[in-house]
Length: 183
Image (cartoon, rainbow, N blue to C red; front, side, top):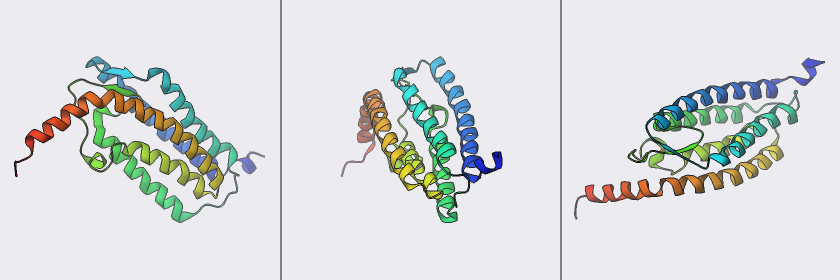
């Protein structure tokens, strides 16, 4: 029966799929605007790996966690709080937030919001939520496995992104040095 195979984990997976679908629409809109402004994409051939990894995580939640798995309300609350951080990251980048890697020659490097504390807060959130949501349903092994996969995928994406932003980051750091008062 379908009621035996659809439970809270499956509903949550579908909600995440809808959430990430809405984010993809926002990303696509920003992508079009960045391209129109002359932005260059880096690592385009790698994007399918990122998208596939994300979909595999959502599918694993849907298919590998039993429908009747008990949920931890404390871990669920932590996951929901983490979504607030996720949207703080997205809001901080604003029109520059996309799922892909674009660089716009004269655009500033984000140094506000969570970017004051971390160079790649979006990826830290991704790793945390990849472990935390399966843990909500007691699927610790799934969380560990998917964290390992995501860590490998994101390590390479970070390398691509850092390389793409290195020239702009150097100019930004030089600008900050000039603004510091002499002591």
